[in-house]
Structures are given as C-alpha cells and as structure tokens.
Length: 114
Image (tube, rainbow, N blue to C red; front, top):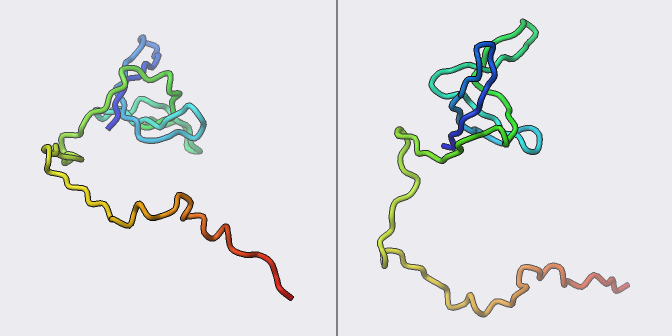
C-alpha cells in the first residue's frame, strides 16, 4: 500500500490529509487517492448537488511524505529465502537455440510459384 499526505486549504486553515494512492489517474501526472481514517474531505458535484467523498484525483507533485507500507491485515507478499534454498534448473537445450529463434515466421518464403 502506498501512503502519502496532501494538504487541503479550508476556511479554518490548511488541513493535512493522510491518503492511499490507489491507481493511475486519468491524465498524465495524476493519481487516484483515497482518504484514510474514514475521512471524506473531497467535495464533488453530481446532478443532485455537492457531496463529500473519500476519493479524488490529484497531481503527483502535491503528494508529500510518500511511503510504502504493508497492510497489517494482508499476508506478506514474499518471504525471505535462505542462501542455497533456491535451485535454478537450466535445460541443456537452452544454449542451442539461435539468437533470433522467435523470428522464424518472419523468414518464411513469400514468393508465389505460378
């Protein structure tokens, strides 16, 4: 989970909001963020009028104190591997393949004999 902070100006002064970066934004240089701790600090408009929401799009330079944290409820993604625990098996045929073996279809004969 990527966490950061953003600053929002309010009529009472600046508020620092902790957010989680949840995805790439709709335009270059933007990201979707979700406010943490149950906050809904972002005002959005719909056909029914303004409402408060926990997600918004922000420009990347507005993110401060960006850090990667593990969610305590999630299982760890990887475990430490002890030296000698991992064994890699290489096929003896791997070194016999030509460097451009994946381009074989590009060399087929396209001439028509009529």
